[in-house]
Image (cartoon, rainbow, N blue to C red; front, top):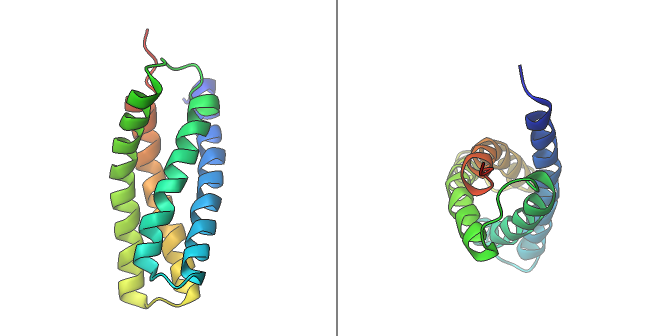
Length: 134
């Protein structure tokens, strides 16, 4: 059975992830509107979302975890997120490659990639970056 603390973290991580998704998607569409291709635009939009989610997860989702220095924790978070990002971007790129780069397919690819990356990101954030130190 899942503990109340874990359930709360999952819920909060989901809310923060939703905010990160909105930041990522907003930046993506802004960059696409500026004429960037869907691959380059996503490569620029994703890092902005990573910094936003790190700050929110640090302050809210995993507030009770150990507090190593901000730089060290951000570095750890970035490494963890890169694993999730690799899965995320792979799904995103595969969907676009297989089904085309229409607006609907870009949106579908964004959702699919984000969904896959979310699971890897939560595990890494909980077990590595924001691990509680007894």
